[in-house]
Image 1 (cartoon, rainbow, N blue to C red):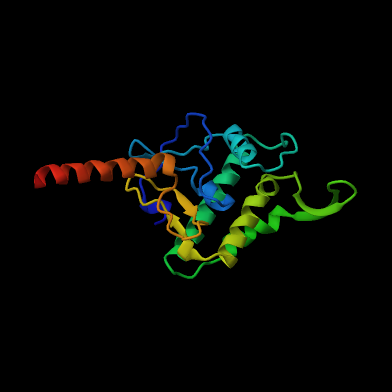
Image 2 (cartoon, rainbow, N blue to C red; image 1 turned 120 degrees about the vertical axis):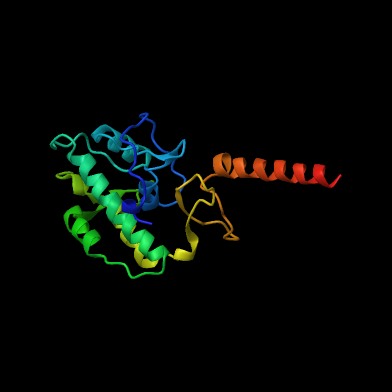
Length: 205
């Protein structure tokens, strides 16, 4: 379901960085619009929110870019909308139009370089230029492209909790993951199921 078909996210944020539970960078960006008390809340409200999220996601930050105020926020939200539209189409078995993501990727301009590894070893690492917001968000755009091109969308799901909208990639061995997190939605549903069984047993007696 596209954002246009959902209630608009509240424009407020506690300043907390959403937990990274998706097991994939692109899906974690989608999860920056969670449901809180039954309403969608956008966790990205300004450039600092985006910078904190990038740092939490482990992406390289080469200092603060000289961008216009809210330029990074607007770029992050545009990328998030592009990824959401593509992921929802793929999850529904529909054809994915990659042109919007390609436009973002064209500005990301990633490169590779040789870097020192353990001891005297060398390794090749990819890096993104820091001259634009799109370059700063380049790792996410590339992760989204990889997700759309190579991943099994039978394993890309939304949390089964009816109050939750978070996405995840099921890397479990049995591929039976149902919840965004066992500590939150999983535990809540486990407790609810236990109480329902107790009530049913009480009625039977």
